[in-house]
Length: 118
Length: 133
Image 1 (cartoon, rainbow over the protein chains, first blue to last red):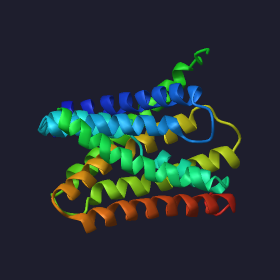
Image 2: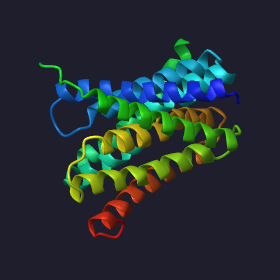
Image 3: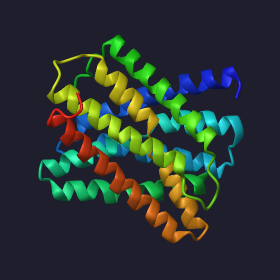
Image 4: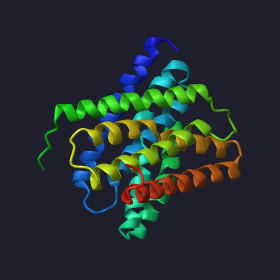
C-alpha cells in the first residue's frame, strides 16, 4: 500500500467516526427511552451503504477507502456490545434482546437491500 | 430542539481516534485477507479486541477516574468505534449465507455476540473491582 493510500485511510476513518458521532447524537436527542436507537441508525445506514458498494462491485483501493476505512469507522461493533451489556445490567432484558435480534436481522436486510439497489 | 455546541477539540479527538482505529483495522485486514467461505478472523479479532478496550475505557472513565473531556472521544468514540465494524460483519454473514455456509454463518454471528458481550462483562467487572487500573 502506498503512503497516499494510508493517509486516505486515516482521513476517511476520522471522518467516519465524526459522522457516527453526529448521527448518533441527532437520533439519540430525538428518540426518548433506553433503547440505543442512535447506534442502530448508524449501523443500519452503514450496512446499507456497504451492501451498495458490494453490489456495485467496487473493489481494490476504492473499496478499501470507502468500505474498510470510511464505513468501517462509521459503523461500530464495540458500542453495540457495550450498550447491549448495559441494558442487561439495568434489568432491561427485552430491550437487550431486541438490540441484538433487531440489529442482526435488519443489518442483514440492509446489506441485502443495498446490494440489490446498486 | 437546540443543537448542542461541540467543542472543536472534542471533534478533533474523535477524528484522531477514528483515524488510528481505521489504520489499525486496515493493517490487520491487509495482513489477514479474508477468503470466501472461511471464518473472517480479521473482523472477529478487531471486534472482540475493540469491545474489550471500549468496556475498559468507558468503565474506567465513568466510574473510577475524575472527569476528563477528551479521553472518551479519543479512545471510545474515535478509536474503539473505528477499530470495530458492524457493516463488514453483516456483509460477511450475508456472503457466507449466499454461499450456503449456513452453519459457519450461524457460528460466526453467535461467537461474535457471545465473545463480544463476554469480554464487555469480564472487563467491566475487573475494572470495577480495581483489577485493571
